[in-house]
Length: 281
Image (cartoon, rainbow, N blue to C red; front, side):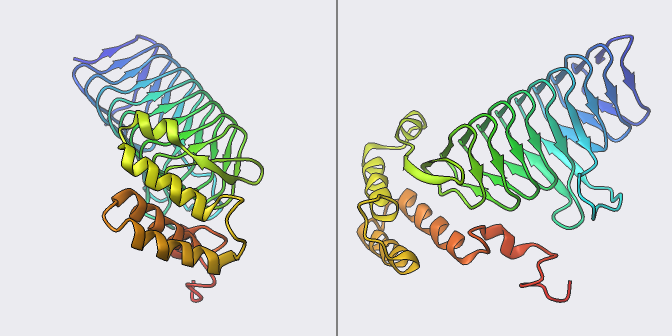
């Protein structure tokens, strides 16, 4: 049976795996589910319809599944879903979704969320993601797999952080970040290819060379200045140059999507309360 400290409160209806561990002064709500091997160290709150997979560790003062900080939220029975083998450090807050989106906030597998990270309503965090201390995510953000976000960075709602990317510390991210790239600054700009990260993640030598060429064509200061027209031309050229490289093709798709979105945010095109794309809402 689960190991539950005498000072912890487990509300009727909560479901705990046989080997789950709940430490001192934790509170687990009636709609919560804790998977096998998941540990709440102490002073953790798990509220709302929150489902946690296997092997997660949650550190003191974290709050999981709280109501969204969204004035449109009307108390809907939305959820927070957390996968397997995540490390959720001190004072992290993860809010459940809203009916204005998918009704779900999701965190994948094998992620490290350092102290004081905030993941707002309807966000999606992929797998093998590192969110350093104090990263603040607004609602509806998508962070793809193998991303590292540096400490104290702030991410605008509906932004996509492309896979295998790196966000430097204290960066203000108001537009989509392309995959495979490093962005930094206030506001953020693409600075270089995330070469070290790509090598660590097993991206082959040829693809790294192709992506370095893509960076030069799309973002280098040596590239001709031509705005959207130049970007379209560069994307066309990259598609022709590397038709069989899936990483380059993924980058080109991301760049095109962001250019078609509102304010450089592709996901904002699909927001249900968008007066431009959904005038009846």
